[in-house]
Image 1 (cartoon, one colour):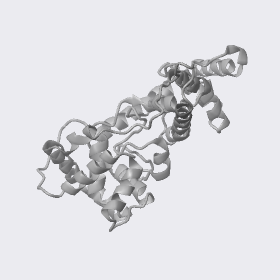
Image 2 (cartoon, rainbow, N blue to C red; image 1 turned 90 degrees about the vertical axis):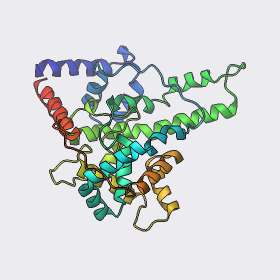
Image 3 (spheres, rainbow, N blue to C red; image 1 turned 180 degrees about the vertical axis):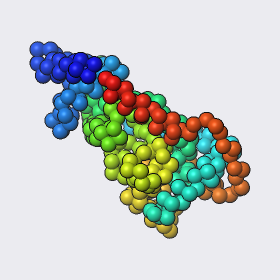
Length: 318
């Protein structure tokens, strides 16, 4: 079985290297850049040849910078959500406060981040983040950019010069932002001992309790529980990693409200998000919390570990 898998990958590699074979389901632009940037060729081929990765058929984008609506975050400040966030803060108090002690970042802010990002770990996402990030990284691929220019064309057959300039700038921004995340994901997967396609998260390409992008994992991930691994599905590791991120973006004890806003803005460039996180953090200690009953159901962290173990077992058999 292992020999068959190796032969299959070799054949795919040979086909890709051969220019006569043509298009690689639309991903050529990104594949070639990854190899040129130092990712092993066979890993790139194996990732994009996987049946779970759809062909690239284009990415539509607007010349305008999108803005998050405040309505997206209103539910987090409703009484039931505040109560759930308080339970999160209490149940994981030891880990949040250890991270606060180590990095000087408010435990209440960390708990608010956890709750807004993933419901305190209950909803970390099921999307294949490799594909989500790869699509965004393809925005500036020449044919894709041309299709978007044509979409915004006027009666003259081309978009007006200002719109064209904004489209080109937007494509460049998306590529500059998300190509490094695709590149980093190969390193993240190697550290975690899984394949890049095995890591699941949000539709935006983030994963774990604090919803980190791959580069943030590499730059700020902390093994707080001392088990030799950095897991964003472990509360101690995730809380310390999140705190380290904020400390690395200017958070220190005694910040003004404006300075706190500036730090949270680095986490998510959305005024609605910043307001929600800081408002929720301010409310976490304003009422008593009823201790949640323990469930016999395996924890999210345990289920995540089981999933990774199953992936490794499947890989060994293949």
